[in-house]
Image (cartoon, rainbow, N blue to C red; front, side, top):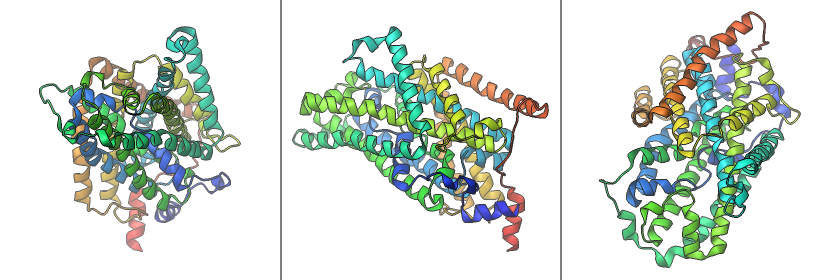
Amino acid sequence: MLRNAEYIGLGEDPSPQMDKYQKVSIIPLVFLIFYEVSGGPFGVEDSVQAAGPLLALLGFLVFAIIWSVPEALITAEMGTMFPENGGYVVWVSSALGPYWGFQQGWMKWLSGVIDNALYPVLFLDYLKSTIPALEGGLPRVTAILVLTALLTYMNYRGLTIVGWVAVLLGVFSLLPFIVMGFIAIPKLEPSRWFVVDLDNVDWNLYLNTLFWNLNYWDSVSTLAGEVENPSRTFPKALFYAFILVVSGYIFPLLVGTGAIPLQRELWSDGYFSEIAKMLGGVWLRSWIQGASALSNMGMFVAEMSSDSFQLQGMAELGMLPAIFGKRSRYGTPLIGILFSASGVILLSWLSFQEIVAAENYLYCFGMLMEFIAFVKLRIKCPAVSRPYKIPISTVGAILICFPPTLLIFVVLALASLKVMVISILGIIIGLVLEPCLRFSEKKRWLRFQRSSDLLDFQATDHLYNES
């Protein structure tokens, strides 16, 4: 395990043969994270409808502290400790074994694909007022297929292209809200920010909206092997993305709730465009509608990048057939991209609320395993070098996981029966699928290969203690 010890200590890419592909630098990485997590304030309107202005504003601040900060910090530490594609699959496999690593990969991939099924639908929802034919029927189905194909092709052409497209889309998506903020200054009434009615709060909608808009910080870890100098780039990119995401939520909420008299029932998906019309006119509404539509494209390509490189990393670990590890001439995992795109098309029939709740449910189970892996690796191999390490003790590592774990159980408890059944069925498929794949490997029905080794933390920790 000497090779693994050196790689872990230096934070180098364990696959030097991949150096011929262009690596992702910090600015595109920041915006890839931004689109993995957020994509802008589109979709936060439901928090005001569910709980009013004060709880919506406090929710995004408090939730960011108790959920986003721990998840981002853990991603920074573990992502630099294991700078290879597969991300959290590698962490969990090293700490809990390959079986649970596969379950982690399956649940997070399924959660990501469910999430991605939402974006082509939302994109068309913003266009249907201009093009009524997209309301339903064959034109809508055709449009979803064409849009999915175009965005999938963009992923095929390379992660660097996806990253810089994310930068352009991010700037275009956030700029109209800055303009709207300047226009709204004379109309702001700070007293409107403090309106609260605790007797009229939809806690399920409120928590699911916050959770959906502030999770997936760990998704970028699945393409760590594609990042330029990950030991330095990863922590910085996560920090800058955190500032961008949180400010991108709070600022528009302050503007929207402070400049317009409150009508909670109107605060639903797309209401920011109506606020823009009231404050600046039709031109500003059109800008925000266009930004919202394009933001869905940014979230789609970022999520698909994460999902497809995760499958590629799992193939390198021998968890999936070797064909998932093959790359196109652009360095992208072709089979992983096609597989993820197929999943998106198959799941596009779910409603918006069901998609959000189902992905949250599966995501929660995956996060529980990540927290366990993080703590176990801190306990079992404290001497292994971590290019970035959260400046806390082992006890602190346990405590930092405690608040988000409590939140996970709250989200799970509030899920509807339908969402529970669909999600648990998905989990059961993963539990059965892994031994089926091992059986097919034993029978040589499918070809597997292992070009990446898991960390033997006991041997490696002993090696570092000796030195």
